[in-house]
Length: 262
Length: 262
Image 1 (cartoon, rainbow over the protein chains, first blue to last red):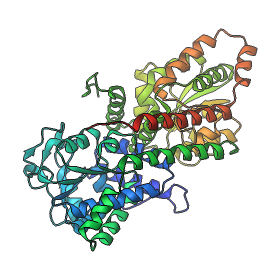
Image 2 (image 1 turned 135 degrees about the horizontal axis):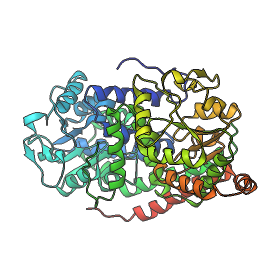
Image 3 (image 1 turned 90 degrees about the horizontal axis):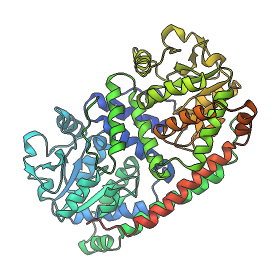
Image 4 (image 1 turned 180 degrees about the horizontal axis):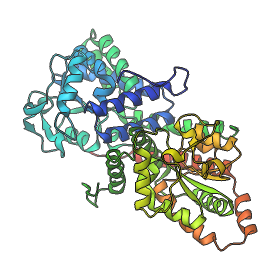
């Protein structure tokens, strides 16, 4: 897991290092193979987006931090990709917002939730919900193994953070009346469209920003946080992300046309 | 490998079936884990492209078939993803154009080339170059294990078909003076930019079309084929692909904006 085969000078070094971290986590069982394909989709959207946090994504991050701080029972839902990419940030976000961590998987293969719990505990988590028999409640709004939730966590949460999530799940949680925050590089996905707040950004860039926003806003008054939330418009943020991708493609096409590589 | 968990009615059934075929081939050693991430990137670009063969991709397919038919020593280079997705089409294309099949991998892990050879032979291939000691030649223009080639195949080829390929490899082969044909869903990739002919399409759609074009053109006169090749402009085809993606994003943004999922 530790070693890398990429030189720092390589133009895609960071991206390749992240890939190696993910493929290494297939062996630890944290990641399902389908998680690698999903990561590839994210890579392509990030490339088109310009591989940086946009101004409108930053607005979503601020609204998300405020929403978590206002919540009575916020929960951070953790799947394999998220655990592999940013376990430390998740633990820090849980601390900064008072949220609980819950493992919630599409494929509950033997040993997988325990492997994810291990990664979270190694990153400093003191409590991890949703593992094994703890996921004893069922939510009828969601299909697949994801319907199994912890009665202390997602079941009773008012705000759920479900980064890198699928559409069914997000829609199910919204139907249950929960406020749902997601991170998704595809602004056109059902998750992006259904969530209350969609952060269209690479989770590796967004998580540290989310943690620092939560810390910054922690001292704020309640009505200040409420204003930050009500000023945010998810539909507008999604449109801004799509427009950024459109104009980036335009720019890349202009730049790409005269390229001579021979 | 055989079973599928997807109902035909699912809007993404075909896409999910292809994913299952690929993840199944990790176990058979045909696919490297990095190949799953690459597939995800392709999925995202295909989604933006509209998941259908464009008119300009069809032009590239015709030029590619004519180029292979005109070649003296055409070779089809096969990696894990290509073998997993379209072994039968490769065998038919080799037959239709008189090309030889050669396994050429970035990661030559023990047993992998043999696994790919097996898939090709099961699909009807009578000869598979580049496996084991047969890859005895080295081309200095290419780094990684891919520099190891078969002296009967890629080394002496005038036309090389390298679908789903990385940039270094494509550029190396072009520098050697070979005509290089590729299939790549990202029109901005180094491979797409460096190749002589770039088919910007999903390989699962492009391969059967390439086979039928090769069969259709097989009866043509040499000068007719030459006209088809010289009429083709790869730079224009790449621009057309980028413009298609741009306008698709525009259309999706328009259609996406009023979506109500709750």
